Image (tube, rainbow, N blue to C red; front, side, top):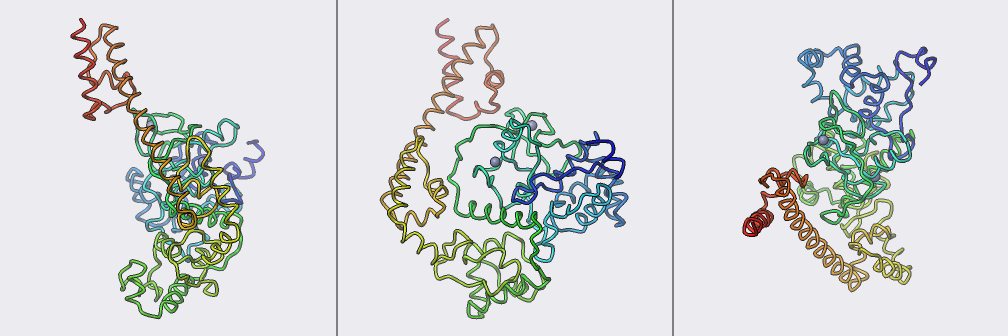
Length: 443
Ligand SMILES: [Zn+2]
Ligand SMILES: [Zn+2]
C-alpha cells in the first residue's frame, strides 16, 4: 500500500479478494484485513466506522456498553440488514472502493432475510488456507463459508472446519471478534490451515453438495454484478405460482413442503419472507432453479414428478436422458473410479461424475453395492488401525514417562500424547491401566 493511495482516501484502498466468482470475500473478512492494514484491531476500526455512521440509539448504546452486544448484532454483517448497508456506505466513502455491497448478500435484500442465514461461529477450509499460504496468496474468508447451509468447501468438496484444530484449544471462533486475524485462531494463535484432506466421518450428502453449489452460484452472480431483477414480490410470486401448480390446496402444499399451512399462507401473501434455508429446501425437493425462485421467474418454475432432486441446472428428465445416452461410458468411468486406492465412497464417486448417487444406485445397482461394501470395509480397517495405533501410543507414553522418573498420571499421559480427554474413554482408560500394571509387575 503506497502512501499516495492513502492520501486520497481516509482508509487504504484495499482491493477485495476473490471477486467475480463464488469465492468472493465476505464483508467481515474485508473489515478484518482492512484493520490489519492499518495496524489496529477490528474492534477499533468497526467502532470508529459504526459511531460515525449509526444514528440508531440502541446500536450506539450497545457500543458504549462495551461492544459485546454490538458484536452480537454484527454477526449478520455479511447479510442484508440496515447495519450492513450503513457500514458499506461509510466504508465505500472512506476507501473509495466500489461495489463493496457485493461482499455481502445486500443485493438480494428484497428476497433474503438474515434469520437463520449464518453459522453461529466461523467455518473455514483448512486446505484453502494452507494452499493460499504456500502460494503466498492473501489469506481471506469467502462469503460462502459464513452461510449456514454451505457446509462444504466448494473447491475441495471437504467439510468446513468449525473448531480450532489445536487439541489444547478446540474453541469455536466468533464470526466477528475484537482481535481477529484471518487464518489464525484468536484464542491460541495457531494457523488454521492444513494441507491434508481428512476422511470425512460421514459421506457427503446430496443435499450438502447441492446446497453448497447453489450458494456458490448465487455468490458468483452477486460478485460479478450480474443484474437480476429482484422485486419486493419476487418470492411471493414464486410461492403463489408453486401453490397453483400444486392444485391451489394450501394444506396439501404445506404438508408436501413440510411447513405449517398458516406459514405457507403468509409466504404466499407476502407477509413475511421465508428464511433462505426454506427456499433452498423447496427448490431441492421440487427440482426448481433456486435463482429462478428467488427472482420470481415463474415461467421457469415447473414441478417434476420425481421429487428426488439434485442438480438445479438440469431438469430431472434432461438428466435421465443424458444418463441413458451414456450408460456404457458412465459404467466404464465408475469402474475406473473403483480402482482408486484408498477406495472412494458412493457420494465421492457420484461427485466426480457430476451425477447423483441415487442415479448410480438406480442405473448400476450391483456396482453401487460393490462400491458401498468396499468403502465400508476400508473404513472398518482404518478404524481398527487407528485404535491399535492409539493403544500403542498410550503404552509407549506410560513407558517413556516412567523412564523420566515421573508418574504416568492420566492428565500427564494425555498431555504427553497431546490428546486431552482421550483416557476418559473406557477402552483407552483400560489400556492405560493395564500398561501401568504391567510396568509395576515387571519392576
Ligand atoms: Zn478448500
Ligand atoms: Zn485455538
